Image (cartoon, rainbow, N blue to C red; front, side, top):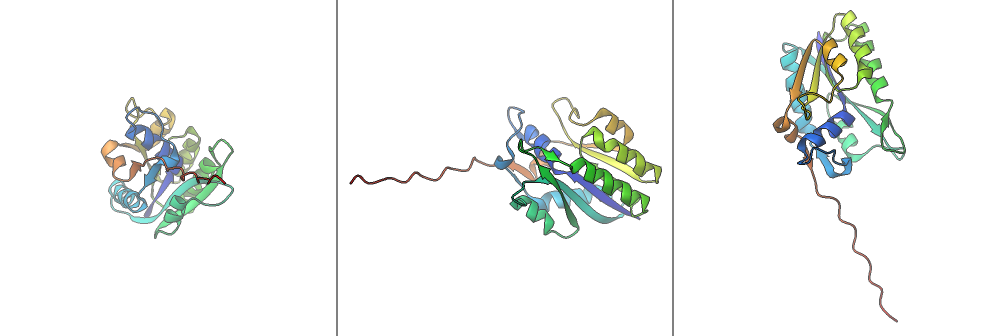
Length: 196
């Protein structure tokens, strides 16, 4: 049997940025840089440990895409081996929509089809709890992964934590290995007009 990894990118960016921020506030996504190779390697190792070295089916990377198309960071994940980019939409307030539904569908279908024996879920929303229950009803062990919050693991649904077979938390050192804050992009210099 195999293990699959389900990553809510919005959760990783939002909670990772709060952990890295000196103030504990969320950093705008445009001011964050993610190292796709490093997080994929870390997730692959984590999945192997949690699943007793089961073969990796793939890592599913869920994110919201603007109407204009994919972002450069999303393209990086789409081009990687063993990674499947799954996209919801970004609304006018830059909130991702449809991502939780995609996670629920994929986790449930893979479990129902006996494609996996273990699942690593890197997310925090209550909406995913039903998929965890359904996957477990098909014999899948679900390993919940989170990012340390202000008060331990307060940025994940408590009922999602209780439903999962195991719960693990990544701390600042783990998150800083693949996510970093970058300086705000500089505005282009204004063109000087010559007096006539």
